[in-house]
Image (cartoon, rainbow, N blue to C red; front, side, top):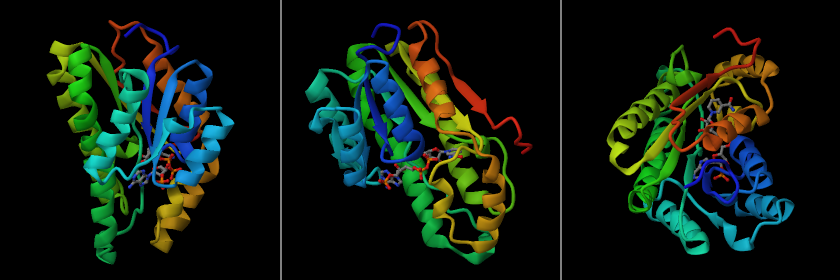
Length: 245
Ligand SMILES: NC(=O)c1ccc[n+]([C@@H]2O[C@H](COP(=O)([O-])OP(=O)(O)OC[C@H]3O[C@@H](n4cnc5c(N)ncnc54)[C@H](OP(=O)(O)O)[C@@H]3O)[C@@H](O)[C@H]2O)c1
């Protein structure tokens, strides 16, 4: 893997909206070969047309299904012969107070935000070990650093992402693999639309009034990928300048 972005093969999960879609735009413009997964295939088709991608560079992918994540990565390897970067980005945030007992939403967050990330790691590791290079970028959050009322389970998943990423970082040294955690604050995407607890939704809508555009995240990812191969950007935590917590 050379430094820079040009010609790198980048797999992005959750690429149908928000941070994933915007990062796909930035990286494709910078000359990367992006391979995009999400469940809403029609969104991916629109993005593929916008970016003039090979129609095979998108694949319907539910990250809670390990075989689908494996197949997305295989698609990248079939198309381009390698996988240089995985952006483990798919996630959801149906925050709620625990006593509302929205247990199905807790399960969903654990399945997508934690197990989906693990399935991504499982899918790329064998390829990256064989290549003796690669970069795994996991998306955590400010909520991976702090927790508040209503955010217990979401924060739990994002703390888990950081713990897994740090363990991964230490374990993959023999294969020259880089690991990056990106922890954003409030960025304007569809994320808060997954909140069904009306009290939490109202508070969150207020916080997100000052959300910054997804390009803020895409630039961080570009920065991490474009470093020389001997530089491993391990974590970037960023917020809107106006965000207090
Ligand atoms: N926006 C923020 O303020 C913020 C802050 C900190 C962290 N984050 C994190 O950033 C990541 C991206 O979120 P976003 O802000 O861009 O929100 P978003 O606009 O709602 O995008 C979420 C993406 O995840 C995908 N997704 C959800 N469930 C999935 C599943 N089972 N399988 C595959 N893909 C799935 C969605 O695609 P489909 O529905 O088409 O499958 C969508 O593309 C998440 O991990 C989120 O926790 C966001």
